[in-house]
Image (cartoon, rainbow, N blue to C red; front, side, top):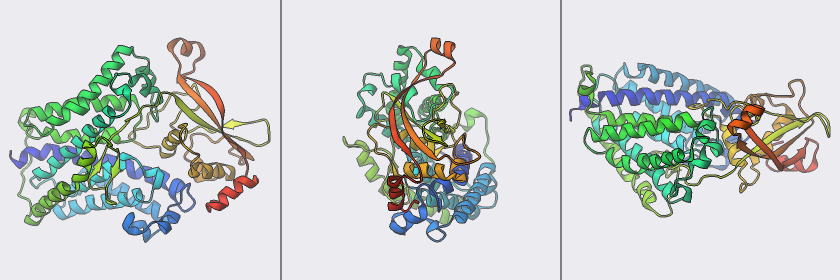
Length: 478
């Protein structure tokens, strides 16, 4: 197939990746300092003192300060805008490669020191796709066919890995009942999640069957000739769109949707499109592209061995540069939704007021927001912290201390601050079970959630509590 036939998938991949990078750097701009800044919930400067550079390559080993965290987030945002608009591709091969390299290197710098707040599979996925984008080439140069095919290889591992982890995991994937729970218990529901949860049981089971079709059958055809590859990519894109409209999963499914664009090569004639005049790539660029193919082939050995292993693990990077990773999602499904509700008070026994988070459920009447592809990192970790098997994480203890101190940066991560004039004297965390209300209860009460108090997640504490201060001092968080 002629390289010009890959002009359209390259265009779609570059613009799509630019949008995802833009979201990622806006998240870093707004959230990295309160989460991982010098006085964040998990301070990155302390982390870098304990972890050597070779284990977590990051430019911030040279600049471990809030000013640099903010400056490079702005720089990444600007570079992402160049990619979204296509200006990154207008000034030759070297300029194109430089923009995409800087995007990859800067975002890698945040991920490698972001600790728990950046320990998500879509971080590695963005870095892997972003690294390949360095070698896609500018608009006027023939697209490197092999690099576009590597994107199909990434898509295959994302989808097939997710399908295998489900078959090997929770029995509800095999008896087709997982969607009886998923829409209600997923990390961050959106306005449509309750609608999907209340669908008839037979339709939810068809949804699980479609999941298996999209993740276990369609990936085999990504590497097939046209039109089979396009058909498989289209089915997968439709499946990913259904996930996008039913929940907030940051940019995971958005990026996988963009990867489906790699299957449209060879369809320019069908679409009635003509590529612009293209010139052959510079010899060194062509050699570099084949070097990347060889690198990915070698680096793929461990992810493939993991994927076919009965002890498959998901969302793991095998090197500090996140070049070739293993993926998977929802190998197990939680049956009950638990939420931590944080409250503060200005006196001892009365006047407790709730802090409302931007994304996660709190107020039972509140309509869940649409967040994705933007990522609310604190809200996501609150979902993990609420799991019954999890211990109280250190960052949560620090979070309560920041509320008692009235820390503006941390309070900026929340939707509401009920103590805008002066910080509370005490805070506590209560533990609830949440269920979507049915249609009759919603009409009667106006509540979208029914919540049941189970007990205390963390008893009330204050900055004068000896045990609380001892914990903060032990970890250098006071």
